[in-house]
Length: 391
Image (cartoon, rainbow, N blue to C red; front, side):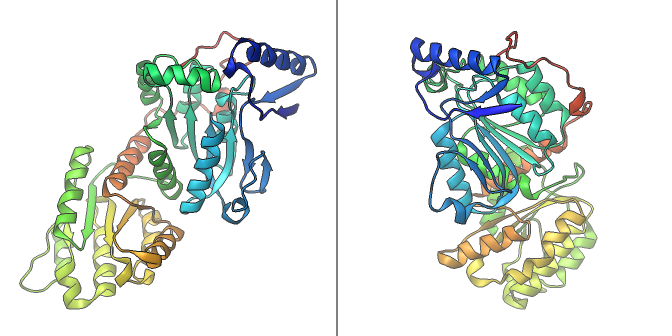
């Protein structure tokens, strides 16, 4: 079937005359057997083929655009453009598809979600939506897949819902009902664009999460360990209870006068044995503890080399134990080290809280029960003809 992308604005979002024009476009396209994408959007970018169906022409786009396993559906034009440039400039995540859908007069988020669920290049799906055209169909799609789906819903408040009407002509619906529906469908909901970007980046690197056990913490600061422990507690995540064998192994690099504890404050051990020996030994011991299901590691890039952590990227996958990092430092070395870590599959978060929030989201996703039938068996109507429930 043929398709047309209408990127210009001035349609249903601006009033009755624009609505009439939009309906006329739909009528003409339907009679010709053509599907419409938009209007009032930025179109489509394919990160693997480097195909850009958009008026977005940023000179840095071609240098920054990196193919990857994250796809996005964004009901905003400039947000999708700015968001895309932000995440590409930040690094650590590549793009499969970026879909800016605007007023979605014909093609809507449900149809694109179904496509992305089937897309072998897409492992993680993020959305910014102001309304959902066919809620039962959309929620069934979410329940039917093992791919993480992360959603930022616009129009949560009365003022936001009113703004959505003039932005993309969206009827935002009842947010309380929508949020409960997301939870029941196994969707991870976020509340700002940076959280959306961070969780997508985390999911792009993490493919499993064992429920049994808890999170281990490696830190160079007692205060850092305390704060991270508090954050785990506040997010409903247990701190790992390390085995006696692990404590015995840790003692091998600790000073005799200081028995190791958890969180593992390794600074005295570093003073005795240096960064490389301590980090490699401690991380290996913690990752092989059956009571540990995930690891948070605090790092000092300006005093370290990435080789100390090279094995960690493969360990997290072979042991099905996700790992996140929090860095403190400054200058080009901080950026370089962050990029090196993410190249070996370790997501880095600028805030301790955001790394813990990602673990909470990962646990929510991988705990999702009752993955239902394959997507091909989902049968809710999603045609142009109406009768769909809007959220």
